[in-house]
Amino acid sequence: MSILRNDKKLHHIPTIILTTSDNNKDIIACYEIGVSGYILKPLKYEDYIKKIEITLVYWSTNELKRT
Image (tube, rainbow, N blue to C red; front, side, top):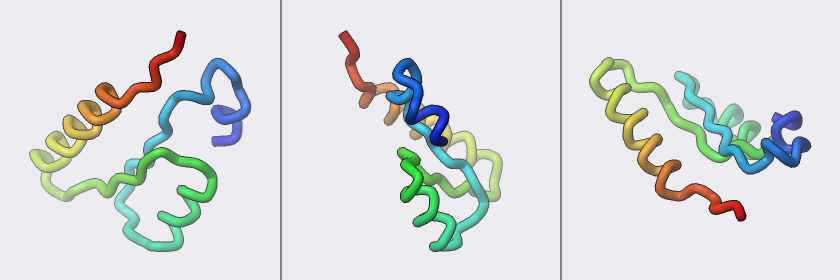
């Protein structure tokens, strides 16, 4: 994580954690190191695909516009 945040060419890239852990300590630790999103993987494949599609739409429509 710190490698991305310290590189001027890469620091704008959102970092998203995709995990099965819903442990509150894990969630807090990830946000403390600067992740942009924490996503729980659903069990069903169809739900997984839907969640990934929603995530991609969100991040593609909320990109930082660099000049």
